Length: 209
Image 1 (cartoon, helix red, strand yellow):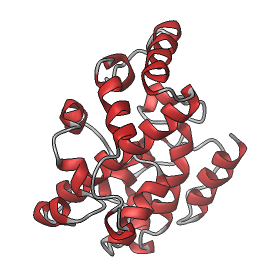
Image 2 (cartoon, helix red, strand yellow):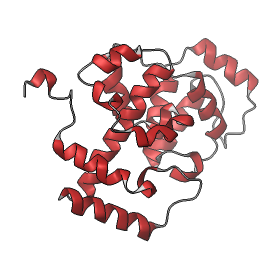
Image 3 (cartoon, one colour):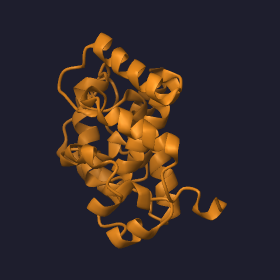
Image 4 (cartoon, helix red, strand yellow):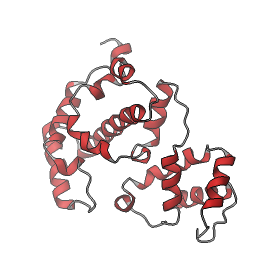
């Protein structure tokens, strides 16, 4: 297949992975309680058997597919890229072809932070989208800046994506950040709220985790 169009369609092994995961809602359904680890391991064992791939590779490939699906919908939701453009572009069209429709319930409450930073950067670069934090992400960061012991269930996304949130918040204008700081009392456990000084606090905490 021509390299120009190599991302335009699902490869057979990707379709097999998607269809295998679709049979197992425990893998992709968001819940407030963590799923039973034994049941989740059993589900991934099934996917590994169906695809003839190691579990670790199945998980990695599925994560990339899910993040990319959410990113494509985020670009539409935020009116950054028209749907018609995404449906025709060789690197995004497959995410709108119907094979991932079982993930539609995830679109009700997903946030920018549910998407890995490298996926944000890749698609933003493709469509020349300015990498700037949304108001949603800034507000969410402010609400959770004191929750240093959060795991992936209490906030709803993996801890490693906190770095993505930090990178985007860091790029916000000083004027807007100052306005937020004036409206939000400081209780951040020894981290003074002085413009970008508070941003540096979340940076150092993230690196220690």
